[in-house]
Image (cartoon, rainbow, N blue to C red; front, top):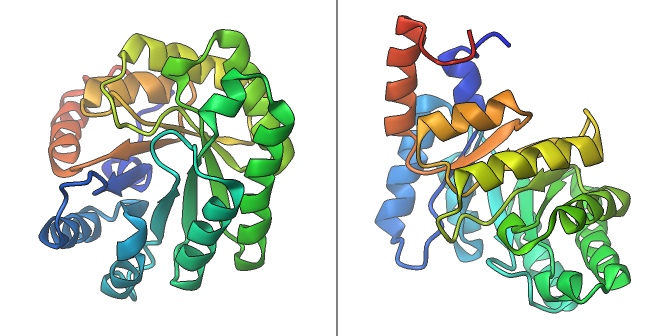
Length: 236
């Protein structure tokens, strides 16, 4: 595959400020960085959606909000409530964690209806829901099955993980291959966890990832500019 331009790669970045100790100043810095590099979206905490939408007004860059990080263990009613408030405040994308406990218990009916409830909440807003599946907890068979379940529920993207732990890059790469095989060419794949390095991002891109949860973006972008100029991206 031909390496993307710098601009194309930045559009694949979901630039994120998510951790519990992230301050308002951190969010504002992340938004300025997102604007500077024209990243695809800016990702923030639910209670900051309204402010982030205002700060990004006129840029064309949507705000993405997470639902039920990091384990997806909130009730469906709670997830719908979080999603609805974020949508009403202007969120343009939702990243929702699958209920990992229900999945590991084999309660696929619950997993599907839980996802579907948030998808249906987002439909009137024309907003895509990504299903976060936390691949490090799952067997290969579970990865395949939850991906098919999420697509059946109406999700437009599968996301490898929440990024709340340091994931093994080899495991993420393997999972992306499984996800692509399970969902086909028309569903997006967002790689997260182990996306702190450009080397990993380019590996994931090569095997089928289409979006990347990153933060901060600056180091990755500047490093990619050098690699692109030198012809050492590994995608040539």
